[in-house]
Image 1 (cartoon, helix red, strand yellow):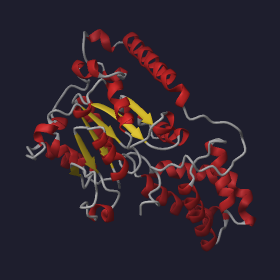
Image 2 (cartoon, helix red, strand yellow; image 1 turned 180 degrees about the horizontal axis):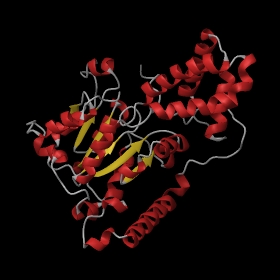
Image 3 (cartoon, one colour; image 1 turned 90 degrees about the vertical axis):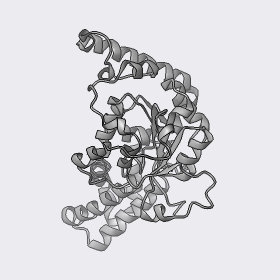
Image 4 (cartoon, helix red, strand yellow; image 1 turned 30 degrees about the horizontal axis):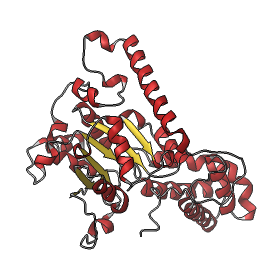
Length: 347
């Protein structure tokens, strides 16, 4: 979804009582599951903006003609969306290869210079909108457990998590290529439930894809599914023939405030002990129980060690399923395409 332009003041007004048919179910929700691409971050729109900006850079910095710049950048974007990752080489090597293939013969030697500029621009435009960051922070402060569940190649998705610094907002992050399932398979949702120590009916899924996020939420019998359409065209489509319909369609992710006014209520900056007790993992900043000494550096170190131990246990449990890398030469293997990043097959 595109970055919203709601101000903080506007967001706070949504704490006013908003009665909906789902109030009873909303009151039972204790965990939110977020999709990443085109839900939390504007992947498709951001990639398009980065490519347009890079075309200008190619003209001004490398003396490309306007036509050559547009041709190269559009060729790369198409190739990248079709096959953004390769199991036999690193992300950097594969993307540089795609750039080299997209450039005309006279410009191929510039691929090593162009790639890092594109990467920098990409993450500038993929940044999580600040009002979405505030939403996540408020959810955590209100005591909700948060999980990020994304389909796609392991390295590509974890790169986004790292570069966009979203890991700290979530108690659990699951990438489909690290597991034997991907959305809409219910087991990937159950894995999050087990990790957070919550029941499926206590969880709400938020995502932009009917065929993965919403269908998966229904198959896993989650309490609620929130659909955030990719664009106005998607939002206008009829759902009459859709087997698994979303419980609620959000015109903007921030509309979630209307259904959970507790998110906006004034609460301590730390997460409640009740919330911590049901989570399989918690952050140092999420410790709100006990005496004031719990905020000391030694306590933080202990919590960090506990979190690392839990992460190691999870990695050991899933090691046989992990998405492995190897080799150094690029090869055309698109079996692990970053499906969350591309909607070409559905548009």
